[in-house]
Length: 233
Figure 1 (cartoon, one colour):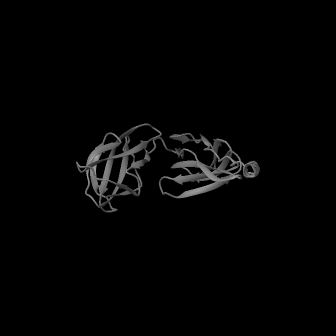
Figure 2: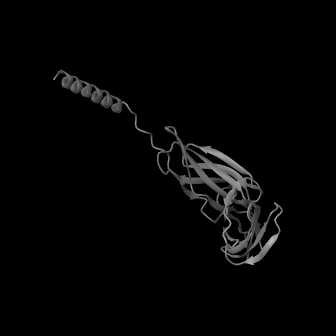
Figure 3: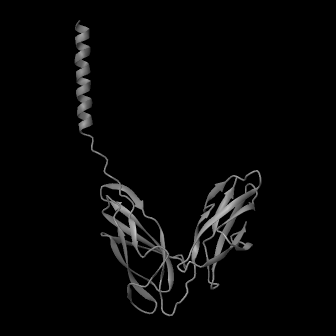
């Protein structure tokens, strides 16, 4: 009887300690959610903003809060030079000076004072307008697959599929040229490809490959993607 009584007392003490510990646990703060981009619009020509000179203008980048965010960083990439600039913002907009007659991509990173996590928005592209421009070169192709740094298994057929995504403010892309090879100075593999994919590209095991895409529009304007690198195992 005494032994049973001691077990009951011990069980109550353990339950009491467990309950007290649970009550003191702080809830995990919510992580920020991805911002919703508003302006400049996707694949649009930006004609707004204040012209600072013949070469520069100030654009107000705008987005909506996705939730649980206290601050933001706007990341803008010059698609001609590859240069990237980042601007901090406390609200849902930021005024940034960028070059005119230049294509850009941009996205927003959301941050929270209560969490170490961040959230990245979609990436949009736009063309900042300039004087005397009536047609615009297509955006450099992106979302190249296999992507940079990927290691892929060579199929039994020995051929793989390459794919990418093109874009143009004039919606007038005609075709693409594929440069592909085992050196960074990739040679031309095939020209005038009508769709953003090509199948049965022959690769060998244990080899590093490099590739890029040249996009062409109806006015013979062209743009060149970054060079992507992948390996076969």
